Image (cartoon, rainbow, N blue to C red; front, side):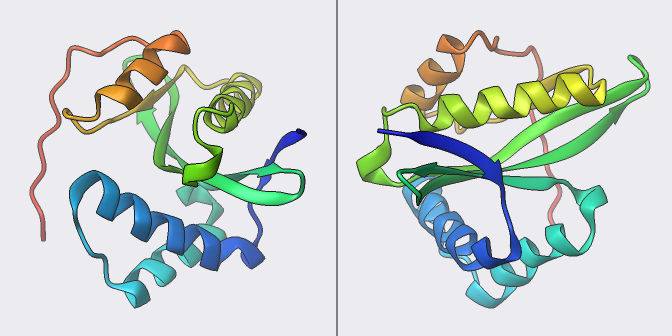
Length: 149
């Protein structure tokens, strides 16, 4: 089966929003406001400085996506590409969709002169952690903190 990765287009906004809703429920049992979510996804297309989405397709059918955002590192004088909002539909999981998207991100990051690729994962999501380790990613020594507004 043919698997391709492409840059997301505005026509993908509904798929991406639906998948973000599904991911939030599956990983954190959170229900997101659909209107806010759709605006949030569209905002990435409106302002490319925010990042970009990639979509994985199998035989022309969209089966997954991820978001890449940027973090400037003054220590390294370069951007990190942050992978976020990863989702692969259930029937396509363990079929190489995430690996293909990750490889596309890594290639884009290298071409852009980025200093690395990062992501965060729920502490309980051991399956995802094994996947990331299997791709050669290493666990960082940082904890993440947040103050919501």
